[in-house]
Every structure is written in C-alpha cells, then in structure tokens.
Amino acid sequence: MACGSGRHVRWFAQRGCQVTAVDRDAVALEALRTVAEIIVADIEGAPWPLPARSFDAVVVTNYLWRALLPTVVACLAPNAVLIYETFALGQESVGKPSNPEFLLRPGELLLAAQGLRIVAYEEGFLAAPQRHVQRIVAVRALGDDAQLTRYPLESQAP
Image (tube, rainbow, N blue to C red):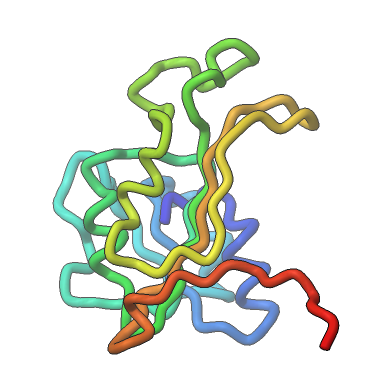
C-alpha cells in the first residue's frame, strides 16, 4: 500500500509471493508491471480500490493516512500478517515529515491493530538515519489463538 517505487514489492516478488502494488503514481507503478499486479489509485481521495479483497500480508512503510487504518486491518485474511512502520511524533524535531497529520501519536499504531495478535511492536527514536517511528508486526489469528499474546521466551535450562 502506497508502495512508491516498489522496494518491498520487488523483495516479496523475488521470493515467490504474488504481490499487489497500490499507489497513485502510475509512472512508478508501471515499472512494477512485470513483478506485481498494479493498482493505480488515490487511496486518500477516493474509495478503497479493493473493497472485496483480502490479503495474506499487508506491508506499509513511511506512509500514514489515518482514515485508512481500519481498512488496512479489515483487509487482512485469516492468519494474515500486518507489517507497518511509519513516522511518529518527535520526527518534526529531526526532519520530514513534520506535519502532525502524518505522524503517529504515542501508541496509535498499537491501538489501530486492536483485535490482532501483536507479534512485535516498537516505538521510539532510531539514530541512523535519525527518525522517530512506530512499527508493528501483527497477525489476524483465529479461534483460541486469537486471544493469546506471545512474547519471546528467554532460553531456560532444564
């Protein structure tokens, strides 16, 4: 979603995944035609272009349009994964984007993923390059698994 030149699109396609690339930049998407299904759409100014589709994974980086957060979660298929990383408040102190409309508030991405099983979540400052981010990996789990929250276990001696 909002794939731009398709760095992640290419990465997943090279690993044998069927990929759908969505962006409003038709020129950038054209270069991806041989590796992915391309959807030219203004996802901010028009209805979601794939209302009846679900996906095994949704990847979003460096992009925020709050009105779409529920749609992103809703289009996850059963057992699908969400990978989302974008800028957070504090970013305005080190660079662009600086408009608070495009910066996540504390815990906002975690809140948007309510109902999903959180696999990993980070929020904070990264030094190289300098940026404030939130990132999450979450799964739409089913049945009993949906209620479990799993954290890495430290190795335990028998």
